[in-house]
Structures are given as C-alpha cells and as structure tokens.
Length: 420
Image (cartoon, rainbow, N blue to C red):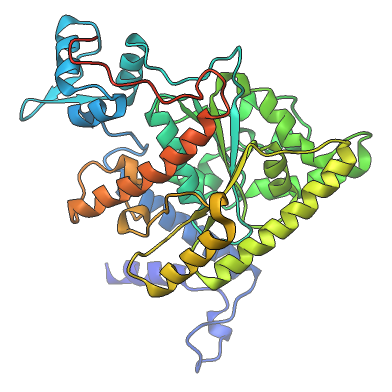
C-alpha cells in the first residue's frame, strides 16, 4: 500500500525535478513538465466539478418556491394557488412542509397562460445584443454576464449567451469543462473561420429553460488568426462584421443576446462590440481599474471612428453604460472613486451599483446567486446579493425594453387577486 502511494506521488513530480537546484523549492520546467501541469489542472477541475455536482455530473436548476414565483410574476400567492387548484396553470410539486415548488419551465408556462410573457413583438421589436466588455480582467465581466442572462431567462425572455473568451469562464459556470466536454463545433469558431454560414449549429440548450449557450474553449483563440487571414484573402470581407452577420442568422429566436467578451482588444472583441446594440462596462472603484476603463473608451472610440469611415455610416449604440462593480459601501476609497465617476460621467453610469458580496464570488459549488437554494451562511448575505442583482439587471432590462416600441412602457402590472 505504501509503495503504491509513493508511486502515485512520483507520478505527480515534474520530469525536471532531478535537475533542479536542491536549494530551490520550485523546480525547473520544460515543455513536457508544462504539458503534465496542464493535465493535472484538468484533472483537478474535473474532480472539483464532480464534487460540486454530486450525485450527478450535470448541473440542474433548483425549483422556486411559491413566494419567489409570485414575486417574479407580480401576482399574489393566493391567486396562483387558486389558479393551480382550478387547473388553469401548472400545479407545481408539493414537498415536505406542504410547500409548493415550481420549475423554471413551469413558471414560463404560467406566464404564457396568463398572458404575462415579456417577449418582444417580432413585428416591431428587434432582438437586443448586449456586450459586457472591458479590456481588463478581474472587473466582474463574467459574473455580470451570467447573472444578466439568467435574470432575463428568469423573467421569461428568450436568451442566447455567447462566450467569446477562450478562457471559457462563462462556459465553466454552466457546468461544462471547456477543453474536454466542449467540441469546437459548439463554439463560434467554425462560423468565424468561414466553415459554416450560420451560428445555429453552435447553439446548445442549458439547464435554464429558455436560455441557450454558444460555448467557448481554448480553440477559440484560433479565430484571431482566421479573421486576420480572411481579411487579407477574401474579397470584400470585413473582419469586424463576422459576428454581427452570424448573430443575424439566429437572432429571430431570441429576445436578448448577451456576449461575454475577452479581456483584451482583439479581432474577437471588436466583433462583439460591433455586433452589440448596447454595451455594459463593469468598472470596480479602484484607480487601476478606472485607468483601464479610460483606455477602453479611448480605443473603442478610435475603432468605431475607423469602422464608420469604412462603412460610410455611423454606428450608434442604443446604450453604453458604466457599471460600478465590486463596490464596498464601507470602503472610503471605493466611495471616493464612486463619487468621482458619477460626477464625471453622470447619466452614463448605471444608477445601481454591483456590490461585493461572498455570494457573487462563485465558489466550489459552481453556483450563481440565482441558483443558490440553501445558503450555508447568513441568509441576509444572499438577500443583499439578490438586491444588488435586481437593481442592476432590472435597470438594464428597462434599457432593453425602451428599445422595443411594443414594450417601452412598464412591465405588465400585477393582476388583482380575483384575476387569473
């Protein structure tokens, strides 16, 4: 037994260990060592995912209690119970404690039956593409993206999320291991390389009813080279138009499309920005992060100016807003920079901030705040996170609805108790 344990330890040692300076703790590394490190990291991710999702290997979405459903639909719980008893709407699942639980699919069914679907009118309203972007990593882009997409799905909108970051954090949050479970055909790569004429084949459903995903993996880096080569070799090809044209092949099936972008100025990021109708820029209230945001706006302005000249027209975003992210109310520095940003950019800054809470830092459970059912910590922490999300995402939802002639008014009003 001891020898087998020792053998396993030996297997984990880098090949170059023997050649390392015995006075140094960290050994040298060659290409073989690095490849082994990559495999070990993949194995750890796989074990962590299995532990988080046990007893299954796929993520599933929790069910929602009667109070949550009533709040989502702006209908009193009594009205829902009476409608369910009459058989007008799905009855949900009765569990211990005589509680009713509803799946997201059932919630969407209830919306449809009661005429409360928020979906756009295809005759008058265009699908809205939102790019969450910043050239700096660690500002909360992926957290902002996934919670925004899930917010729209919870409320009954048809949502497509596109992961354009080859690091694939968004894809991982949907319970997939990017480089072992995501085939490149389920990424935007084949379309960006010109191997297919639609993005439809890349789309896959998720465990969130009404929310589909175009995933990412490391192979997506190849799109940078492909777009550059196509720009040189294909007559009339304009690299920045590719994603916009690809989205046009599938957008009729969706109300909102959310793009998580790479933290860099690249061909792929330029595609995402040009495809977007609206841009949300998460900016933590720290000087280095704000400096990065300043660079983002400078470069974005240069990019759009060049594209406008090339296109002979003007690209106008329906909205472009800064989101102050990772905000700590009791932090003097955060408060100071927050006030500076609001004074400088005024209406360009979202009214609501995204606070920094433990719930929004996705842990080993691989759960977003919307997916948390039983919270191990202080329940007030979860409630506070959901308040932040409702404020920010509700504000962005109103920006989206303002672009739809049929929906530019308020969301459907609550029905009285004698309705339904």
